[in-house]
Length: 222
Image (cartoon, rainbow, N blue to C red; front, top):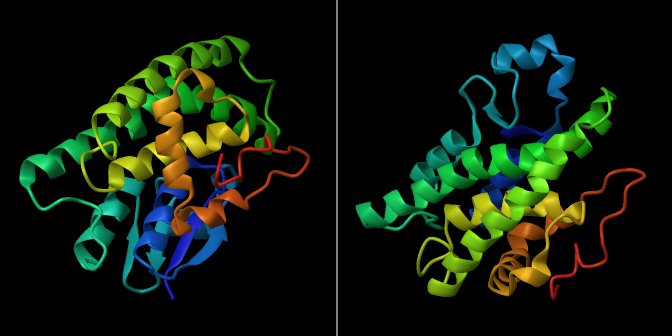
């Protein structure tokens, strides 16, 4: 069975877990702490980052978008990219938006500072980065709100990799109670639809010892 090396509250790992569940493809989940720099893991992925989809003796895929594209090409029964080239390009644009811009401006500043440092036992969080993250998330949610208002799903008429990429990041932030949903109701309604999907349920059961999420976090009715 393929192995997915992941971290429960890493948005890129969550993205791949949702894709695997949507496509009903089984993989063994193995939690990997990349900061430990295990030689066995570095042999599989010299970049030392999660997620990695590893099928011993056959392949080792990383980062998350490479895994996503591979699964899309090999598991075609449940498509997460549309058939038209222009529509596919729009989905890929949004995936890049969330995995690069949103991650740099929001996720890394809130989840990265609050959780990563807590889990690894490093120095205190950078309060300036956290303040900037709070400012930036409001701007990004306004963009999600606009997309959700104009489209059935973020990338168009069908649920796609764009929704998965966005929701993977937001789910980590939501665990911390850092998403101001009340100011962005269209984004909230979109996210409620995503987290009610069966593919999302295992993520909502993840917990951080000693840190409880807000009551709405695992409530599929929000």
